[in-house]
Figure (cartoon, rainbow, N blue to C red):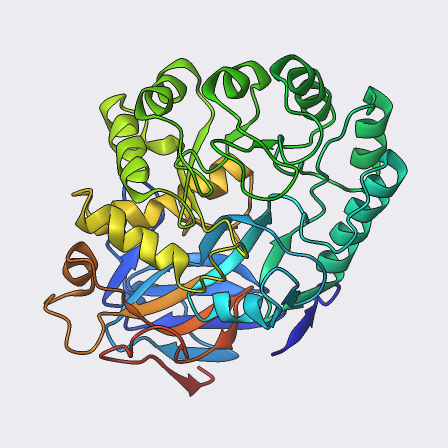
Length: 399
């Protein structure tokens, strides 16, 4: 596993050519008519047909060999601690394993598994700032992990949220995992967080760890957090009528997670489509958790929602890329000039019944990851976790 220092700005020109399918991450145009993408100094410079682009002078030239390229996947809901280890499952290198599942960005929903997690206000603020600094300074496998998500506790005042924002913290951990569980109290703190630019997520459903509790639709609606965290439960989902209520009565992000109720996940997704609001759907794993670590969790969610939910695979990929990027205000997740050059190169798995990548995912099969690129730099080749891809991309040198 490599640790990447974030104070080193990416340099050089990357050209990925001979792309057979380009997935944009954008619901409005999920497939691009292009076969080449160029990045300069870690940012997307141009997209189009190779014959019309300036591919000369590449520092890194990748031949995709007619496989598919998509934005790097985003996991909207993880629970890191420090470094690439988790005391929840006593496992190391779990973040690097997610890289091999095509994930390039992660969002912390709270560092709740930290042994002896401080719950006093001074301590929780210090822990959040430390987590933010830690993952901002070094990135396991190159993954961008947005961490430092304090779990709010009773007694916090507006000044505490101002202090956190000024220190660089941009997130709140899941509301409801700490002492604040009532809607009125949560609403006040969520509003303070929003005032100072901190994005909030609320726990939804039954308790997941000691100290957490049931957070029902009434509390979620009153708190008005930015993200309805694991609307399909983490693990235990609310009754379907409450899930519908949440989809209909607010406009916040509808987060569906791997570590939840699959029937409820499908119901939430279908309700969002019924309302004409598929742009609200984002995906996470909610791991590490009692159910373990799921390096392929995002790919599994894409395949499940497509195959059982009857959503075109190219649309399901948008849930884990462009939708999340827009809601989380990230500079990745979409294939657009100026955005971070974070890509995953995929192909249909060997011996899948699907004739193409999209058809295979639509049948419920996982694709094979052939390469992951972050900030224009290849970070991994053939995945050690996905089924083997039928065809692999290749770094063929400089252009």
